[in-house]
Amino acid sequence: MYYKFISQKFEEIFDHSPLLSVRAPGRINLIGEHTDYNHGFVLPAAIDKAIYFAISPRNDQKCKLYAYDLDDSYEFSLDEIEKSEKGWANFLIGVLAEIIKKGRIIPNGFNIVFGGDVPLGAGLSSSAAVESGMGFALNQLFDLKLSKLDLALIAQQAEHNFAGVNCGIMDMFASIYGKKNSVIKLDCQDLSFKYFPFHAPNYSIVLCNTGVKHNLGDSEYNQRRIECEEGVRIMQNAFPQINSLRDVSAQMLRSQADKLPPIVYKRCKYVVEEIERVTVACEALENNDLVTFGQKMYETHEGLSKEYEVSCAELDFLVEQTFNLNIHPSNGLKGVIGARMMGGGFGGCTINLVQTDAVDVFIEAMQTAYSQTFNIELQSYKVNITNGVEEIRKATVSV
Image (tube, rainbow, N blue to C red; front, side, top):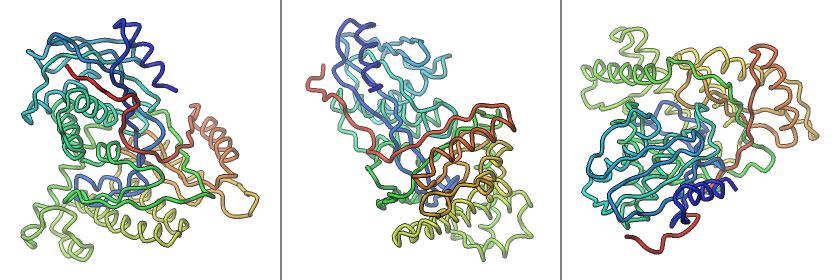
């Protein structure tokens, strides 16, 4: 298990065993992309790729951080919490700062080692896993009595204020609230949620990592949010009751098409339709209709590529390839029933619903096609849906 490497490194650096070990999963989002910051619905789940933490309190005010995967360290004092020049450290420092803002007292410093197998830049929210795991670990270690929702909101604010990405709540929520074999329909307007069992014994979730992350990512993410907010402001002249795109129907949007800049209309159209797609997809899950669910995934990708314009050539190619594959599983059904880009965009992964007995053939065919076209080795992962952030070793003492 990966966490054993983290614990061993902790013992090597600090010359004692960690008091607490924590697993904080990455997440997938089956449908509902770029809807969270528009107060819409999303459908994420925690997965069996995670960031692991080993932590113990100190007897002084020092905080010593070690990033296992980067082989890098950073040290600071509780008396002087500020941004670091090391970007990775800010995800942890930001969580600490937001906890203190909430009036919680961290009485002592701590030693921490973290790392994991969530692929960086793949759209699986490694940063949210780091933030969620850090908050959970400090909460357990110092008995801060923060709720799961507190931890999700703290992680989100850390991303805003220390990482500079004005993200929604979905990534952190999924990492914290995840439940084995279930997806979460999260209402990002009031943060109410419902678990939907994801029973698909004949299908597997396979991620195909493009291996690229175009530099447009963060700046374009923030720009899309600005464009959506502009659309809401303009439409409020006709519909003063609306507060976000969640409140806008397709008919309302069409009635204001001539008032909106064309690019803003395209962005809003995608979001309004995607919010509705999540509802339809959940109904399909309730009816055990994965074919309809998969079709909605394809529709999402089309919107992300053509209207929201956050896809890229590599992502589009991988989705298009799923239509071209000559896969014939043993029962004769179509091997791939749904595919789309996942995450912020401009690189990262596609998520695919693949018939289980066709997974190996699917991965091999996709790797060959991708390598021939882009000369990049395609990394693919079959993932399972797991619980959210949790202890591996229980803290029994706090300083």
